Image (cartoon, rainbow, N blue to C red; front, side, top):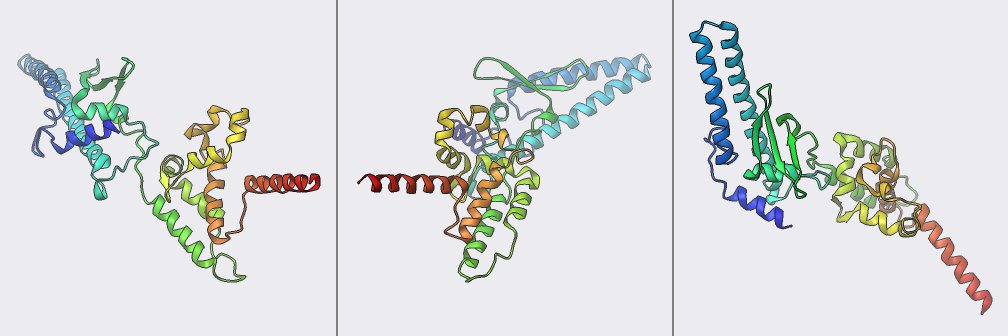
Length: 278
């Protein structure tokens, strides 16, 4: 994707160093806004001290300290974003495809703005593709981030283990596939990666759409049932069935899903009809 290249190019040629201040890393236009705002707080603090208004002086001192901490936190988030976007092993993106990164991509490549609300808290904003302005608090930026963990490696390990044991004649598998699949999907919301990312060289949604093409075309499976959130294993078992079945097939090459069994039955019935008519 072109936007991936643009983001990675930005971080490869990042225009500031590790020793840069938190107010300096979001573009010159934001640095000016921040410096002006800080100067106004300092001026009001000095006025309160001059007027011996301890309460107001304490208020503006706390506001300056709070904002400094918030900007430091935002700097840390930007660094975390850079690592997850292309700083993983081999430069791989660690963000799951489940994550909507449109806000983060724009803001952390200096295409966003920093403002302040009536409570003196920073408000981050970008202009979306449709021209709509999107605002976020600093604490909300990472709220919906989904970073890939060990879920693919965990699945592949189980799949390989099942394949090895399939060579053992008349011996049951030494682990409960359904129990382990439940744990695998629920661990740290890993299901979001399983529904959106390539696991073992395959995308779940591609497989699901191919396997259920007739039901999708007929409307039996509606568009809302294809949204990633609709596969949440907390209330839907389709994701569980898919990955559990892949493990079962690894152990038993003759294993058939319900869908595959129905197709096989239809094919047998069709062949029988054709043979009877011949």
